[in-house]
Image 1: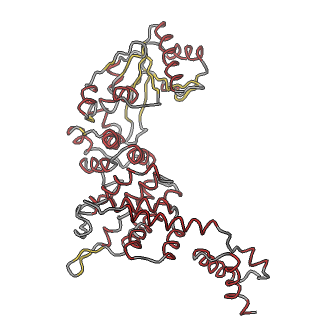
Image 2 (image 1 turned 135 degrees about the horizontal axis):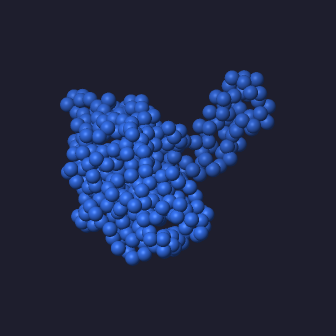
Image 3 (image 1 turned 90 degrees about the vertical axis):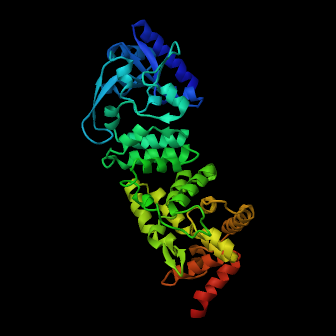
Length: 450
């Protein structure tokens, strides 16, 4: 599909050139091409012809899709390509979408590019000749690894760009220019929709080797307070140096986040795993205390749940994600703690049974282990935990007592019916075969009462 998109871009450019126009690849595609990165989003911008002429060209080549025709933005059926015309934008409010847009095909490349966020995204490449048009030093910033805004006025009109700077820094391992950090620190993010925040956060979580950079950059910009206050409060919260030589809870959280990123591809729910790694110790901000000269955070995994819920309600409304993260936060201590304490198998089975995703729970515990300076070897512990999980899965795969089994045995539903099913489930977790479990359940709840 990508090759077809490029071929179509060249056909559009050729037809536009016949009418006196010029067509450019724009945005992240040019940046990623120069970086040697794959980018499947083919975006082109057509200059120097009227919108009606562009529409005629697109009708000649296929079936145009009006993705924002009043803004000069089209698609083409059967192709993954965005076709735009130069436009000017004027802010009308504080939100990401509060703009008046005016199409001006004769605006010129410099004025068209000035509305872009960063110099590395403001470069254009002629579709037909390959010439790079770079009015703002994007190639140099790309070479030096710098995220730098194009223009003070246009950048400040869109507060989402503060988070884009942070996620680009995390994804590309770039530094944010001091003047961009300074300008970003003056911008108000409160009018942004949570979906926009979540979109940038998800890119940092899933596309960067070190998602911690996203939060470190936002901290430098003084921009954690509105959307991420529960994370900001972890700064300066002390930990027991014997177990956490890396320092405060913020340091541990950032290291855990980066550790989780290193094996997120193994997770059943990568986004959920990363979000859980971010908030797993949020409760330490309210649970940490000093007893007998030692720092403790007893019950932080449960005391922190209201904080995690508040954070999740602010940043997303996805039920699946919220349920997953709350469950993982509450359970995250158990695998490593049970291993250390030499817990019995029934504890592991109960833990896995209560987990929303047992496989990912072990990944979170592994990230938690490596989220510290000089962690101890983990191979033996991980193998043991994985074996316990396999035992649990084998037990869950065996036939088990269900409600219909009790009914077939002559039991009528009543007050003790639910309790009987819970008892049968405990026997299932213990590995008791179905026939014996049914017999024991009937004896425990019904036969002696007949």
